[in-house]
Length: 360
Image (cartoon, rainbow, N blue to C red; front, side, top):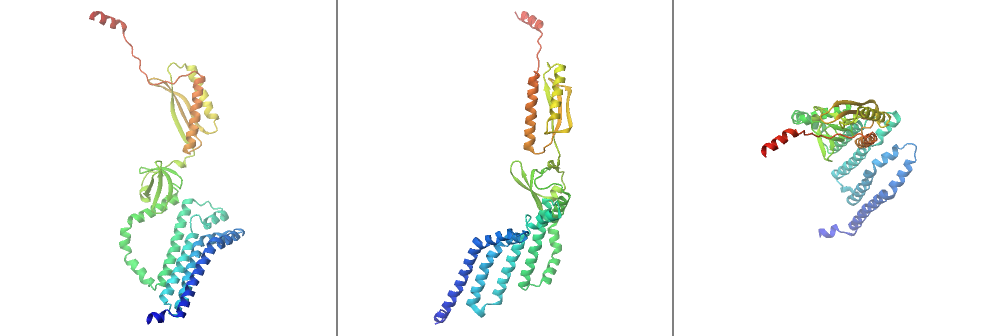
């Protein structure tokens, strides 16, 4: 009997209308994501100010899910009519809060228009690491506001909640000492600009290129292509060599000439190599030394000490290769041979002959 009273014609019609409303909103969602969103975005990009287009991009997915939530709410509201409980209504309200929080979270990303607009309009040179930090802070604020709004809708007493946090604050702070140290070290690294994203750094712990800096740790890509995550407190207490901060890169070596090289040829070789370095556009002109420095064990040693203008490793190797090949050409033109480690053995022939006679 209960079965018959539940599935009456009127009830079936109400169920059918509720399902139709949900399907209709799902269809609207499909139309929105495939056509309407792109059309509105194209119109907004034609406006003089691109703020509205950026906001529209940030809220694309939340608006898309809004159609689903609205469809479920309206279909449920039509079906249950006045029997829809306040708890269910509260659930839909919380879902709306989550969607709004999601949109503002996207809006406060490190690549969002907020920071790019500040750089363009106020002519600020904002460091990318600082942008990442500000973005994380804004996102934390957005999530905190959204969480407070959700807790309020759930009827949780925020004053009691905060008081409970205060009572447990001491235990939490004791357990999170390392985290606090990392946070402080992160602020120091970011604001002192010890290193930035993309810099090549060398520490006692690791060497590589900085890929990401957060308030807790720094991610470094080593030259073996491994990704190493180092706590900021560790890096703050270590010596850090930032190779990317150099304005030039040093080349130093000895050119070992054969002992048969005459003083005139050495002098000519030194002058030609020095002239080569002084006129090369890739060599830094401030510090160039080409000197016959010392007598080696098996060679005349000519010191070459100079710097390249580039600090990029690949470009540095290219310049070094070019200079080395040109030096070889100069040595060939001067008919000078490079020395190699060698030893000469002198044999006393008279003594040897006497020993041979004695044996006979």
